[in-house]
Length: 83
Image (cartoon, rainbow, N blue to C red; front, side, top):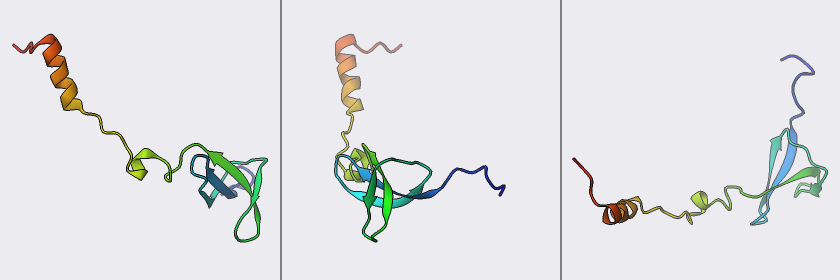
């Protein structure tokens, strides 16, 4: 790799703003906020709106769209115009 062309890749703490759960990972993102982690070191803190901890798909609270019901409602309103 060429030196001096890659962004700084460092440890950061990502915090879910809605659940409060945090995890340590690595990223090129920087922040002025910091947090002292469980290992005693201080890391930049990145607060995000959604993580896998709060996303409806991963929590099982995803709403299912009733597409079959929509088709029937359309046919009742406008009739079946096949052929």
